[in-house]
Structure formats: structure tokens, C-alpha cells
Amino acid sequence: MGFSSTSYFITSAYFPDYAIVAEDSIKGSRLSLQPFQNNFAALFNIDFDRGLFALATSGNQLVIAANEVADGSPLQLDLLPEPALPSQRWDVFSQPGNIVSQADRTLAFGFGMEKIFPPALRLRKLHPGRPPMWILRPMTAPGG
Image (tube, rainbow, N blue to C red; front, side, top):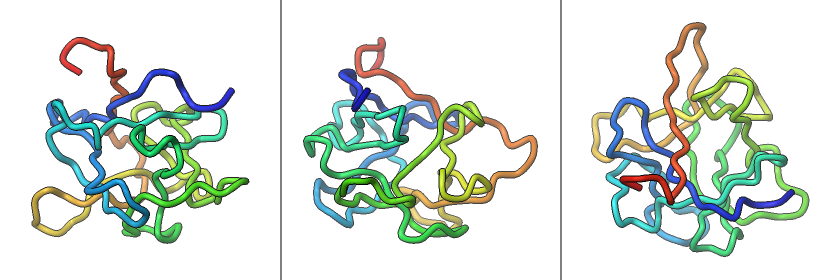
């Protein structure tokens, strides 16, 4: 199927005006939770079949990846090789509202525990009963 023709904001279920935003459009750029209005660094194209989230402004060349597949590992932008690396592949269907690592299904997108703003995006352990954290909001949606 390939990447979506519609770009998405990956918005916080807790803070609806905030979304995952890349600090820059280069490999290694950190991802954090920031206001997303009028911010093209918050737009991602999604390949639902392969589980890839590509920064829309990168021509789908930069994807969300974990430094390593471990609890607390930072998430950042990485170049997309063929085939995609396990640390770059995510699942949005098995735990609706969470973005789960395909390499370790006990880990999902979460926040850093440090008291800084904006909070850095990291892999975090999924706990039973964890409420949904993310809403995929198409760019065409009202308020998007």
C-alpha cells in the first residue's frame, strides 16, 4: 500500500493542542511533545502496512525510530533503509490509542521522565489498563 496520501498529526490524548514534533528535518533529530498548530515538523505520513511514520517534509525519507529497543530509549528521526529496521516499525492496531514497537510489543511511544519542556519522546513499558495516549488526526480535520 505505501505511505498515506493524507498527512497526520500524532496528537496527545491528554493535551489535545500538543503533538509529536521533530526538532529539525535531519537524521538524529529529537522528537518531543509541542503545540502543533501551523507546525509542518508535526506532520507525518504513515505506512500502516509496514508500520512506518515518516516526516512529511522529508519526502518519506526520515522515519520515527528508537535508539535501541529498550524502555526509556529516546525516539528520533532516522533514514529509512530498505527493508525498514525493526527499531523503525510500529503498530497502531493491537493497542488502539497506543503506538507499539513491532520489535518488542511491551514497549510503546511515551514521554521522558525528566522535568523539562518540551518533554522528549521515549519508548515506555505498556502497563495493563494504560489509557490511550495518542490520536492520529488527519491534517484535513477541523482544527488540524
